[in-house]
Image (cartoon, rainbow, N blue to C red; front, side, top):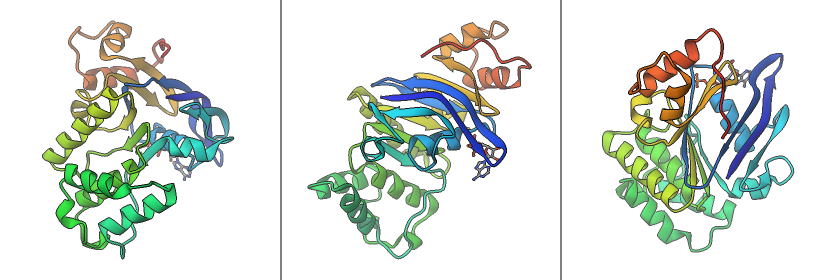
Length: 249
Ligand code: ATP
């Protein structure tokens, strides 16, 4: 579903992502974690086709994001950590706009059910400007999912959501994966995403330091206890002097 191959992204002289390789298969929910500045958002923005790679490549559902940008974008949903909405459009008008851009036929039922699932159906006629931060985040999620993308990419989606919103999102993620979709989720809230993800990609300084299921990660960090949490894995992996040996996806 997603193949990131030897991807590098350089801003000016600064290397933000350095020869990053990983893949996500259908049915997988993968957590992209790493300290501030590790390159998580940059990686997602390249996958979403917002930034061009400096080197290497990305394929979404078999479509190269540079050579086949329209097909690749159709297969992906990207919810940014600070989603931009149009202040003077209502919630429903945002869905209408996205439906037009992606040419989603019969989008109204899907729109209504997304708003109901996200518990913002009663705000469909509110202007974006009148919504709370968490509500704006939910609108961004609804807009991103309207065209039924196969790969969901959510950058720090939990920071503005209330506990019910988080549970609703995790339920939707689990359903999407069970139906053969794939999800890439970035968050610093490790204890929250630990239960939602089957595998983790840990970045530091733009490079992959470790990837695998929690059991695989623990096995590659021999100093850790067998029941070490994702947080303990994170510290051990990102604060180690030498990057541990990485596995393949
Ligand atoms: P955080 O957890 O803080 O959100 P991140 O892992 O998402 O961090 P990025 O936002 O991808 O990290 O940033 C990776 C590196 O790229 C950082 O060194 C950052 O300063 C740099 N960077 C990001 N965006 C730009 C930009 N538009 N111009 C120049 N440098 C940038």
